[in-house]
Length: 113
Length: 114
Image (tube, rainbow over all chains, first blue to last red; front, side):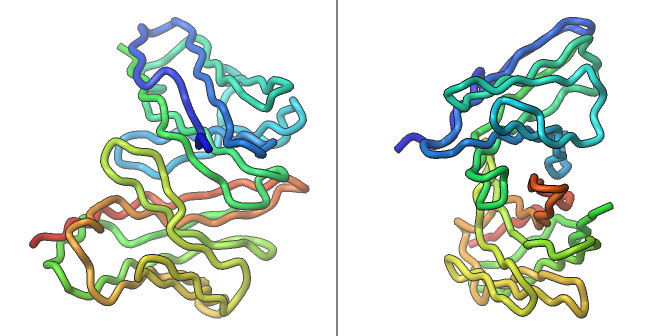
């Protein structure tokens, strides 16, 4: 059984560009949450998707948006990249709107230059 | 809002030493508490959890007890191994309506020397 997968593994972008990160949840899971982990910090909650809708959002600007597809996979989009967006982006999948265990993917390392 | 404060690192121990990593929290309602571990270059793995007061979570020799009176969830292991070297995150799970999100501490880097 494949766990949570994320792509790409690493990404380098320039300030002002846009980026899309992808996540496939663990089999049987219907909820995807996205977290940003800056270097040396704990992950911070960006938002959660369930039934193809954004259900809860953390303290992140509208430049951060997402999407969930009918097969439960998800994308995270970041527009107008800033240097401060450089971080490890983690996807976590779970069942039932995150109420049960959240399983994390390996993350996508985004570097903005 | 919810917050988690955990012991600043790094922590360096010799193999077979006793480990304690302190974690305290602030939250409304009835949160669940978790410890996650992150090995170099990897994502987070759930180490243990406790869903209500006085519950003890345990896994791979690690233990933590949910203490509501002291709002704490300290991680302990009686005898650490080199393979335990990693970053440990204390986290709180709470619901915003029907949705459930995790709030993490900043992490504690543990290095175990042979």
